[in-house]
Length: 119
Image 1 (cartoon, rainbow, N blue to C red):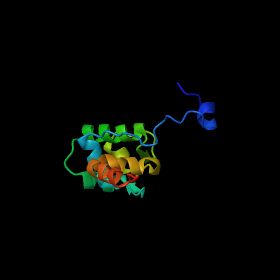
Image 2: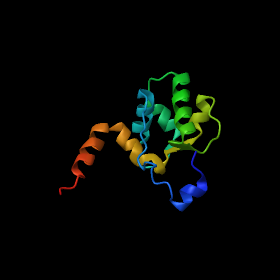
Image 3: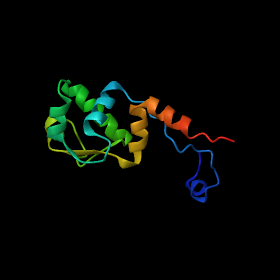
Image 4: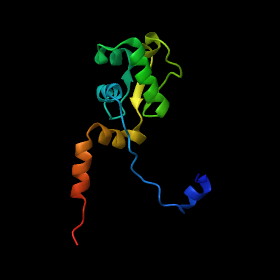
């Protein structure tokens, strides 16, 4: 385990800057529906946009994204669809670039290919 003091001092530079994110189909649906700009999305609008999804699956996917930190919410507990409809959500700006890469993996490989130096 790396201590905070070691990280703050910048001694260990082996930590990757890019986070590898693997998303399920439901998580991808949520993120594409919400958008990655970090703009707030009202819960009632989110429920309408997602459409045909079971309530239990909806709550499970949304709570999963919140627990990992990819999505931020103004409500702490979301146990029912009514809780979701009264909440406001947004994608965490800290993860926006990595989430965008996870949603379109081919784009990431293409960009990495263009960054190579000739020498």
